[in-house]
Length: 309
Image (cartoon, rainbow, N blue to C red):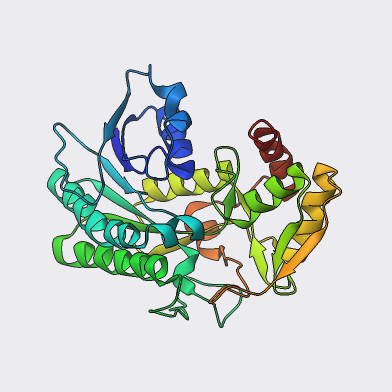
């Protein structure tokens, strides 16, 4: 198979490139390196089955030869990045999705959209199931990401229904592992970087908001199984092991051996109070569930970050 992945030099995208190559695919990585990094794919540069195209995924793209799969993973994905690049985030969720769907249609390829748990907003049901429509502020400070992904899902389903494109949608929950950026603004690299530098860990509110963290290899396994499944409707992929942010801060301090204190700050606008995937669908349709427990995954991630501080 030949698979094209936009955002292939990003944290998730680069791990997907690894998995696709391991499965025997030829991989075309499309990235303009706004948030992706050349270092994430440096180890693949000599592989004859791997090709890099430096390109803005929101601009028209033409690919010669057969393409079996198109995976649209290009987008800033952390609050720091999508607030800083809000218009680019909206463009890659709208125009970028349209370009990628057009490629899939032209090549009669399977299309997989990287969506997000952010489509559920600050959820009113818990855990979140795929049939929940969400509770999202369309003009809030996170709206450029939330609404870009919601629009991308709508466009994906329109191409499936109107043009018969073989589409799929993965709703990705909090993920962690090697190749995350320490400065990307998400809670795990924030805590780890602060702990390793001996700085206070910044906890927003009282730290009672919850998150569910999935190790990257587990997530990639679920995404690959969804790509191969032919299923069309959204599927949650994430780890349902839920923890409060305050508990998570204590866990990071214990694992790093840091003497850092915890510093409480006001809650940012529209920050979700709960986040936990219902993965019944992934278990039933894909035979998938996470295998790496949080402590094991955190130890692997800490080894990576120690070399970056």
